[in-house]
Amino acid sequence: MTDISLNKKQIDDKKILSIISEIYENVYQQKDFEEYLPSIQGEIGFPTAKKYPFANKTAFHMYPKKAGEQIEKLTELVPVKQIYYAMKANSRHEILQEVAKKNAGCDCASVKEVQDALNYFDPKNILFSNPLCTREEIEQIIGLGVRKFVIHSEEYLEIFPQECCILLRIATNPDTSRWSLGNKFGCDKKSTLNILKKLCKKSFSKIGISFHVGSQNEHPDSWKEALEKANQLQKKFPKINVVDLGGGFPISYDNQISETFIPEVKQLVEEYISKETTIIIEPGRFIAAPTTILQAQVKSIRTFNDTKWIYLDVGIYQGMFEAVGNLKFTPLSTKTGVVEEVILAGPTCDGIDVISKKIKIPQTTSAGDFVIFENAGAYSIESRTQFNGFNSPEVIVHE
Ligand SMILES: Cc1ncc(COP(=O)(O)O)c(C=O)c1O
Image (cartoon, rainbow, N blue to C red; front, side, top):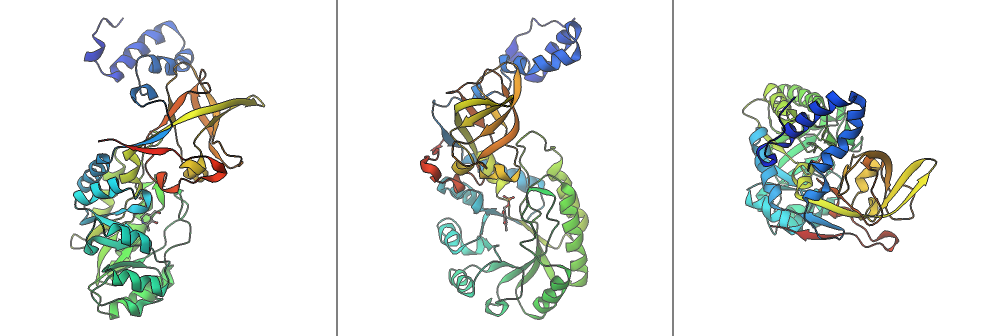
C-alpha cells in the first residue's frame, strides 16, 4: 500500500489522485471509484471554482496580460511574420493595449473597428479582413491609411491603390469547426482562378491567399485541406507571396484539445508553404478567451421529467451566445460532491436561451451558488445585450 503520510504541498494534484485511486481501487470496484472521483477531486482542491477569490457577484473578471502571453505562445508555435489580432473577439481597451505592446497587428472588420484600432495600431499594422463591404466603406478605410485587404470577389478591385496587399479568400470546408462560418465567405475554384489571373496582371505590392477554417476548429486536418489548396495555387501563380492562415485556433473549453494541436498546424505550414512566403494569421478566440473568467450565479432550479434544469443569471443574451453554436462552456462549481448531469440555462424568457443540454455539476448545487466559466473572454463581452431587461455582467479588470 502506498504511504500517504506525505506533505500535501510537496506533491502535485496528479500524485494525490493516483494515490487515492490506488487506495480506492483496492477497496471498491472501479465503477464505484469513478462515481466517487468527482467528490474526491473537489475535496482535495482539484480545479473547482473555489480557487477563484472573487466577491459574491456576477461579473467578467478580465486579466489583459494573458492576451500578451497567448501572443507569445502563438509566435513560438507558428512560423508567422505577423499576428493580426481579430478585435471582434474582444475589443476592450485593455486587451488592444496589451496586443499592441506585443507588436502584433490588428484585424478589423468594419469602419468603426478601424477607427478604434487606429488608437493603438499604425495603419501599416491593420489588416481589413471583411470582404462584405460597400464601395464607400472601402474608400473610407483606404482614406484611413489601411493597405491590407481581404477580398472574395473582383467587385471594386479598381479602387485599391497599387501599394495595397490584396489577399483572396478561398472557401474552406464549412463543416469542421464548432462555430462554422459556413459558405458565406470565400471563392470557389472557378472564381479563385479567374480573380487570381486578374490580380496577377495588376501591380499590387503583394498578392496572397487567405482562408478561415471556422472558429474553434478542433481538427488540424482542416488547415491541411486549405494549405494544400494554397500550395497548388502558389505553384500556378508564383506571384503569390503571402498566405493568411486566418483564425480558428481552438481553446480547450472542455479539456479536449491536445497540446500538440498547434505544433501539428505548424508542421503542415512548413510542409505546404515555401519559406519565402510571408505567413500571417488573424486569431481572435485564442488570444481573447483565456483573458477572462466569468462568474455567474444560480437563480433557480427545477426538475422536469426527471431532468434537473439549473437557471443562471447569465445566458446567451448576457455573453454566452456561442452556446447556440454548440460551444462547450463547462462550469466549475464551488460545491463539491457527487456530480449529476443537468441542463444549464440562461435567465431570459426565450427557449433558445440554453447554455448546455448536458453538463455535469455537483448534486448539491443550489440557488445562490456561484459557478465559474474559464476561457470566457472571446465573443462574450462583445455580445452582451440588455434583452428582457436583464443587466449584463460588469467587467472587472485585474492586473
Ligand atoms: C475574417 C475573420 N478573421 C478572424 C476571425 C477570428 O477567428 P477566431 O476567433 O476563430 O480566431 C474571424 C472570426 O469570425 C473572422 O471572421
